[in-house]
Image (cartoon, rainbow, N blue to C red):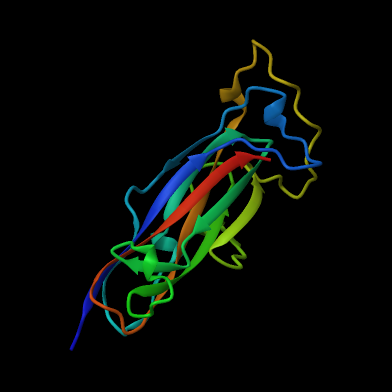
Length: 195
């Protein structure tokens, strides 16, 4: 008997400000804005999968791309919080039930060269599990140490003159065992903030 299931991941995108102990949060000293948007709308969708089909992957070429626009000389922290499994009808009470859950393994990368994003410029991130944090500069520093802290913005400060765009890619794979037919989904939350 062949069973088919429809697989999808939901993506929740958030932009927040936060500060770590013993680090300077330049956002505390100025009114720097940070914006995020999805370049490709919709969910990370593995499509229709046959039960017991094993590993099914979405590679970086078909990844969800998040655009991050901010001050080019500042670093951002991207925090990912995601379900470890996709659940039948999105019902997390099926955790641990191998017939109603499908293991999800996330992968990620970023591109922070000026200009339009290209897969060839992407830097792969070591993703230890589906809940991870990574830090990178909005604009690559070209093998030099970071410069001095920026002066706090004044009323004459025009952030658009120092903005650049970085791109964050989310993709991965699922391992489909002998699961019940149906719609499987999970949630991925992306939080972006200045360091």
